[in-house]
Image 1 (cartoon, rainbow, N blue to C red):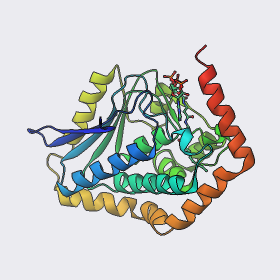
Image 2: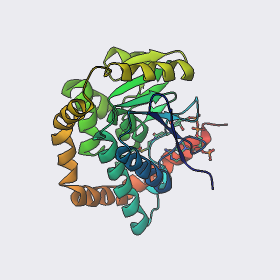
Image 3: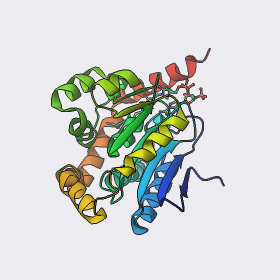
Length: 258
Ligand code: CO8
């Protein structure tokens, strides 16, 4: 079986590249999230020097949650699924190592969330990124919102979230949603590597503990409420109008082709 997440570590720099590889669009299903979660644990144990999160594809970083995990879903599976997403976010948002999202393709919704969880974002030009949940008739959970607010502030987040805005790379750069723009994947990757050089003369422990302090309250807000958050999610997606909306959205995605 091919892996959905491939991790390679550069022997010289100790930097790990975590490559998402679930064709066609890296949509986040239970299997991908489970693999990502265990990769993040391995990297935490090995005290990785840095992590670059990227996509195998030059078109899409991640299309977000696999809508099939929410549409006509079974309780047991969806419980595992949402718990895995919580787990990935908690691990990535609070990772010991410095983290960079090399956003080499579109990053809507859950794809944007993964990028927001990293410390630094480099994005290839002419792509799109954003939390577009309201456009699907669903409500982004508090921890999705907090991840955005912590980067672009309350006002910009409110406008972005209520309108379900997808930003172009250029727009995202302007408001600080991404930190750097790149020409292509290769350029984005080398710019991502540059980020780690900032810490050349910084104690890894002082760095990591500072990150932990800054991010602690955001992480704890979910850690203390995982059960409640899970119930809210299941309750929300079970609503008849939400199911109908997701079905229509899936149809519209398929129709775009022809
Ligand atoms: N889930 C499932 N299937 C998907 C998804 C997805 N998120 N995205 C795309 N696909 C499918 C398409 O239907 C298509 O399938 P098929 O080949 O069978 O027709 C295939 O993947 C390829 O897609 P495209 O042809 O659209 O590929 P493009 O390269 O043209 O475009 C995009 C890529 C831009 C990523 C485009 O597919 C897109 O916009 N996708 C939808 C992205 C999106 O809106 N995701 C939101 C998911 S919801 C979420 O992540 C957070 C939910 C928070 C939960 C809160 C609940 C209360």
